[in-house]
Length: 257
Image 1 (cartoon, one colour):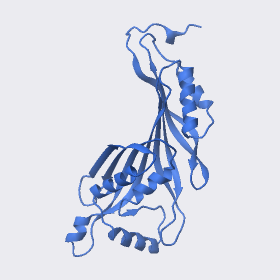
Image 2 (image 1 turned 180 degrees about the horizontal axis):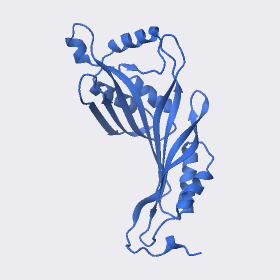
Image 3 (image 1 turned 90 degrees about the vertical axis):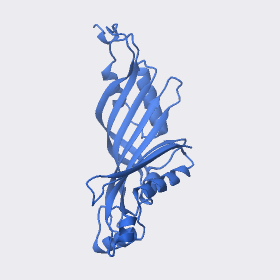
Image 4 (image 1 turned 180 degrees about the vertical axis):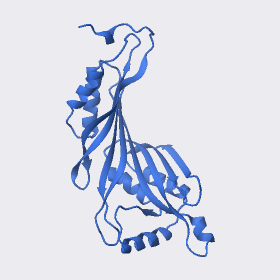
């Protein structure tokens, strides 16, 4: 049968990335408490395409993912990238896994168990030199109490949920829980799925004892990331869903270590 993809391209321009998006895949992720955790990922996979070729072979991306049965760790991701690059006869391969990671988070006073999902994204790229690079992104909700509102108010202060978005490049293995904890320790309080009255009292009092601007939170996270032995680059952005304003506040820090 005629292989149209390998025919000459009418417009001879190289393509940086060509592939498939939105494939759903069952995924096994390393879990600090349980060893491993089953989740479901949306996967984007692509390669570069030289100017001489009209198209790539889209079915080969799906075949590579269908044949991949490993855990989502450094070694497994590297082998998947190598397989994709080889199947497509490409110079560079690129894969993104976007998935929820679930942590059992007990209520702070009653210890009632609840499950909290954290949105994660792992991007892997295999260039021509064969040395893969990985970028981990984790999104963590926290609670903040406004220090200014607390200082000027006779009673109370406004509080809101804030979102911590971390992007890190690592030189060695690190648990997802490490980065989640960094974010949760950097706001006024962590957030929970299940809270009884005793827990609400605890969270409220704990948060009001540790008020934090969005600037405080982003600095707190950045300081913790700077001290992490396996992080050599990071970007952290904190967005506060302001409760008394019709806009959000944000702050961002990016560093190479």
